[in-house]
Length: 258
Image (cartoon, rainbow, N blue to C red; front, top):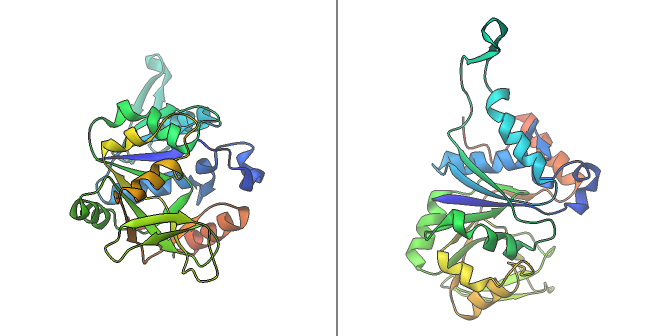
């Protein structure tokens, strides 16, 4: 199964660093948050990724182009015409496709543009700025059990964002603005999607979180799996520092790998 990562936005709320690079490439522990997200997927055997790039997409491409080189011991033998010998390879067993999905394309449009790389199969989708200790295997099993077009991961964060209405059988019935009575279930990404999802997206101007998900909810084709563990979105510099402190302390909840 492939994992699609949305990494094309401008990241204006953390502009101190996103002026130089896409927000998913901002580092935690000297590695982009995008790398951390991919490591979570890889822990569960998901090693094929499609990255929806846009803003400063060349930064993402160049980082992955150099990744093998930067994570191996290398000998450059100039007596043999500059031959390069790799002594060890500690890079992950990843297949990464980076797609320029446009500078101003909305989230739904970015998903639509990578249809040919996904193929006619179930796939995973998440945002390139949110990290979690979510159990991917359990998420996929949950999706298969319900048999719907889309499964999203939801999380209770109080009243900071717009919220979901979810029935007892996990069917999402509506998206709406928060109220004082809400427990605060929000969409945190980590979705499992059937290929029919592409039929719900019109084009580049489609916001994935609006018309496509709202239509799926109205048709009872969207379920929510409540995540009870750790999740954090890196929206601001304060968020980044919080994640950095967790990583440096050795207590990063999302570090599931050895």
